[in-house]
Every structure is written in C-alpha cells, then in structure tokens.
Length: 373
Image (cartoon, rainbow, N blue to C red; front, side, top):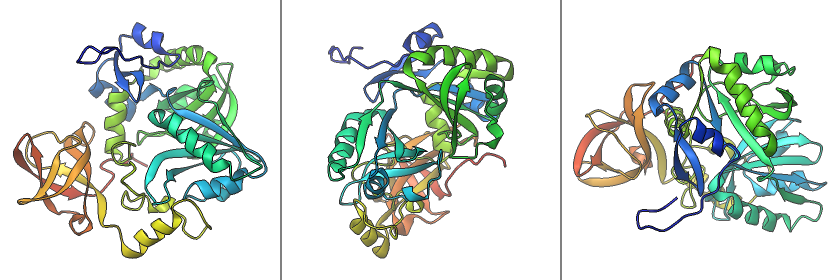
C-alpha cells in the first residue's frame, strides 16, 4: 500500500486476505493491517447485523497465553478488574493501566483451564502490550507469557440469527453458553473456542481457531448463513455498530491520557480486590470524582459529527468528540466525546463545530442503541 506522499507501507494481512479480495472488499489500513472496510456497503452491512447476521474477520487481534501457578496472582496485579471471580471458560472485560491509572489498552481475559488464561488485545497494540505484560510478569516467578497471535485466528458472527446459523455446524449446545462465557468444540469439523461475546451490541459468537483452519471455517459459515441473510461485514459497519452500542474503541475513547473512571468503566475497576497497577491513582480519581466524563452527543441540526470535532458551550470550547457518525439504526447523527463533569448532564445543550459552523446538539444517555430483550 502507498501513502499520499508515495511512500510504500508494508501492511500485515490476515489469513483471509484473498477471501476479502475475491468478495470485492474495499481494503484500508487499520492499525498496521490491510483490512476490509466494506464489501456491499457500510449501511447494508450494519443493517444485516442488526436484523440478520454479519461475519467479521478479526484475525488481526492479539492473543497471549498466561499460565503457571502464579497466573491468577499476576493477572490480579496486572489489571483493575477482578480476575479471581472468573469460573472456567468465563471471560471478563478490563484494561491494562499505567501506574498513573491511564489506559494502555482494553482487553478480554478468558479463564481457559486451571492456571491457564488467554488475553485478547487490540491489533495495533500487540507488540507494546506483549512487552508490557512480559515486563510485569518478570516479577512473578511461576508465570509464563506466550504470544499466540500469529497462530490464532478469530471470527465474529454477530446478529439475531447468529445462533441459528452456527448451531447446525456444531454439537455444542450454543443456547447454554451464557454471555461472556465460552465452550470448546468443533465447528464444521474445526476445533474452536466458541465465545458468546462481540462488539456490535447484538447477540453473537466469536470463534477462535488455528490460523491455518480459518479459511474453511469462514467459507463454511458464509455458506451456512446465506439462507438467513448472513453477509461478510467490514470495519466500517463494525464502527457504526459499536458506536450505537456506546462501546469504547482504543485510540478514540481510550488512550494513555484517559482513565477508566472518566470513560464510565468504573464497573471494571475493583479497588477492594487488593493491589494492582494504577490502583492508588484510580482510588484518588474516585475519591475526587473524575474531572471530565464521557458523554453521548446527538446532533439537533443537520450535519454529521466526526471524531476530532470540538464541543462548545456558547463561546467556550469544553471538549472534543472521540467518535462520530450517522447512526443507521437510531436514525440520528451521533457522537461520543469528553466534557467537564459539570456538562455531563443528560439534556445539556452543546454545539459541535463542523468545518467552522457551530451546530446545535445535546448530551444524551449511552448507549444510543440497546437490542430488544
């Protein structure tokens, strides 16, 4: 891939790269990877996930195995959430924090077996996260950290038809897998970890398998799901889906200048569990109250908010949008951003600066969209 100034950039590719080309995907750079942003179109793909199902290539995500007698004690120190509460095959959402309480990354942790866990981290942060995790693990003698990112593939099957599409391909009783739990089993004859998780606001499953097996798995899922309206889905729809669901994206809502409490992720920060990296700093933020807070923004005037646009109260610049887009399901132009805590009240009037013009908007509750029960 060539940049605007003619420089050649060598992007990484997932094992499904040729599949994406064959399906006519438009490929873009994302976190150092060449990934499909769309196939048939972002709107069509978004609506398919909300009403039927979509299949995502998320093989670019990173997976680290953490094992040994000290694995639990290490993970309890590494992250703010309480890893000790995980039963076997259960997962939780948490962050890697700096000693100052800021966010290095957000991730999932799976409890795979006794003294064995899997960390799933964001693609752009794999090398940095691995170095950080290994550095912290060096303080725990009975812990081994192994990068399995290259050997592991990941697909996300999301939408209300996901269970009906997947069940004929596996003997695992999918209805018994609770949200944020997983089970091991074969899907279309391929060994998988089947996880009831996702990043779209819909029900669905994420399937981890060996990288060399992911092409036949992808093909089997698309073929099985075609009668129920399953289509391949790219990063564009993934972004609008997660935005409507009010889910944070690292590099936008979360970064090294942001702590989990101001991102309203306090439910993942267990200050009473014992010491962990960033605990003292987060304890102080909780006691004082975050100086700023994440908010949902709904545009009242016509216009499309985007990440990076300024948020105003009259002539006062009070914050910045971290994400923004038209919300196809909610049929509103929406964004997420940070404002001083004083302005984070539902119904607060604000303005968004779009190319020099201030457009009327208001603070609204997150998420913008919640799937019907």
